[in-house]
Length: 149
Image (cartoon, rainbow, N blue to C red; front, side):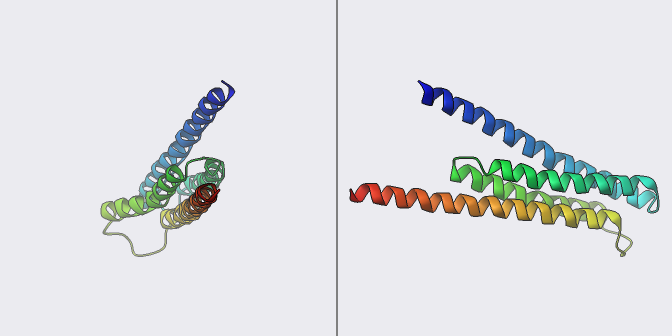
């Protein structure tokens, strides 16, 4: 009876963590798009700078949320979450490139924001995939040792 309650509790917490990660990634995408538009319209204004700082906070939150997601028990779910986390800034970069294809050619705040988000998501997603791989190997070793006994 307690294991059923514990399993439901862990599943509920896992869903909450997944929703938080999805919300953080979506927030990062929205902020980055807004930053790109604001930087195109007024490159030296306050809004691109403020959105850049908000993007840095999103990057830190992505990393913190990935650390929380590492508590997930299922290696397959961790692998999928890691792949989604790594793919998010790549999709964003492709989207921004298609929208602003006739860019100024210089370095702008939005470009650096995408780089920061990409590094944060890549580090977090790859870490989750490594954790998933390690847990998968541990499960295989446990199965082999129990089969030998």
